Picture 1 (spheres, each protein chain N blue to C red):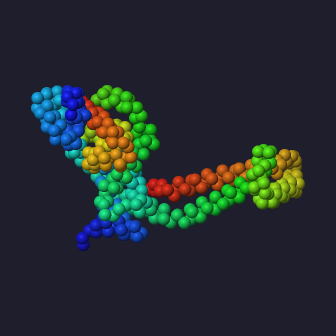
Picture 2 (picture 1 turned 90 degrees about the vertical axis):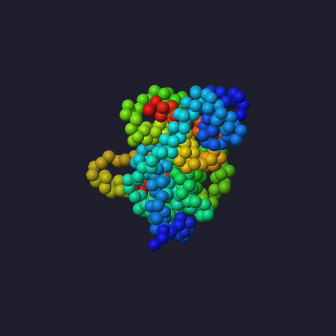
Picture 3 (picture 1 turned 45 degrees about the horizontal axis):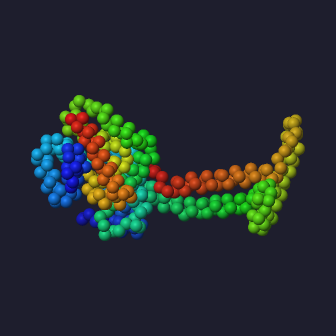
Length: 181
Length: 196
């Protein structure tokens, strides 16, 4: 039997069929989890935030336009939830950019950074050490391939902030990656 | 693009170049510059490496299927909705009644500040009086218990220093706090607390 489209699952969910929503969750939980994982760097928190994202998505389905693709919308909600979570939790926060720069320039990675797996781990760690807004713009630009303007609308920040966050985040990541290899 | 933006330190332009947001003329000029400038070419290579690393970052598998948990949370939320609304409405109504009952007493204590409000709340004064009578009866009842049983056990007599007004204020205040606190907790719980 052919898989039902996202649109039909959303419409059935809107009619109150929770089973249809379960199908949607099963279909996209991996994608949403990876958004949260990249943003948080912790698989357990990422799993919790994935769950929270789907609960939030369900409660906002009334405002969702069924003619637009479902998953980009859900992933943007995940980014905003993760950003709020980062801002609420001190252990995720690096409040001062100066502190952040200091951490980047002083930290050394393990010597076995040539290994592919370790390079990926190192990149994940570097992303998870960025301040929340930097992580969000990196996620939206590089992993969700949004334009500057779309990022600005998604995060509700000025276009100039999007550009400067991206610039500083990439600069820091590039420094970190280059010290690791 | 101005000449100063094309100097060796302009990583901003390099990022815009990689993001493909430069206009054709600037893009061509920067490409030409990169071909001639080793410093900028090195910076460009470093950034390009970062871009490609991010592009190649693999997705991690999710350890558990969370769909059942999500559906359970949503079902629970749906079940609780009508009950929670009723509880919240009942709490709010009770809080208003309790407040109205104790307010005339408080405002009398405050003197002329609350005089106008006392006038406004005059219809509720009867209710406040009834509350005071209820408290008086409760005090009598406690005294009776004391005289009947506690005295039998040779306990020392308790001097009951609490006036109806202060008791009303304490009970009313505590009730208000409890109702508001409980209402807030229930509302938070209704707003999609994670259920594992």
